[in-house]
Length: 152
Image (cartoon, rainbow, N blue to C red):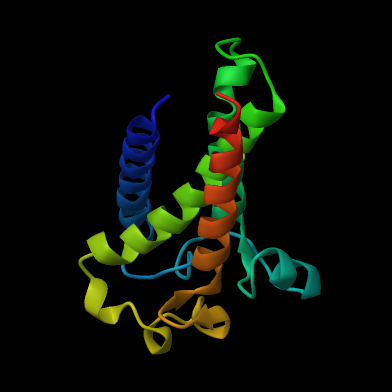
């Protein structure tokens, strides 16, 4: 897989997932108005970077995790440490890009409202001009991708 194919696949998946989430959540971020369960305790705040864990997000995360592992499960690619690094790197980058695109593509939000004082679920963990998760997911995701292509 070339770098361009990886990036284009990432952008296509992130865009489609963001558009899907916009249809589900509308203007209300972090499943605020969805009929889903919510857990908010010390463990879930650590796990979710200060946000409550919702049923919507738990099952969406698990679905994406299962889908990115399909090449291994379907026998299209043998499992390897480098392959797993690429899948996990892709997933981390996907969540950072998808979440940002949720704001950019959402008619109720737009880039102008992408600010700490506007986004309650990211506000407590905001670094410089974007949420802390974006920084961490981007750095770790890029490092895992670089490792995954290092031996090929």
